Amino acid sequence: MFSHVIVGTNDLEKSKRFYDALLGTLGIGPGVADKNRYFYRSRTGLFGITTPINGQPATIGNGGTIGFLMDSTEQADKFHAAGVANGGTTCEDPPGWRGGPSGMYLAYLRDPDGNKICALFRPKA
Image (cartoon, rainbow, N blue to C red):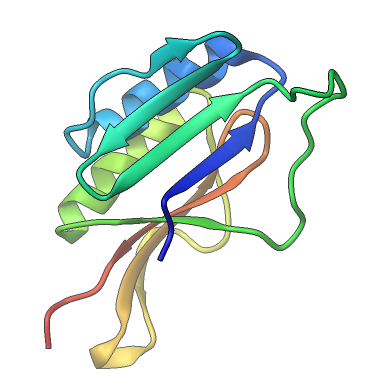
């Protein structure tokens, strides 16, 4: 459904360090520079960070979450830990199972600019 997701940042290099570490846990290489942006490509889409083109400060969307699909609970935990170790902050409940026996494993954090990120692992039925 989605071709790309781009979030704004007020500190491009700090954000790059955060996302290089976070997305590195998914096997995605460091961000590739393009003017005032960095892009991360995978076989399923593109994720980008940018300073706002209009010159105004980047702000977070209240209520928004960007979810990244995980292959395992271990990968979700590594993703979350890498984010916290590189300037992110944990939010919501601690990483863990939600929704009972057929639920999903979720690990939430905020990036250095406050954007809400979620690692999601859903076991195969």
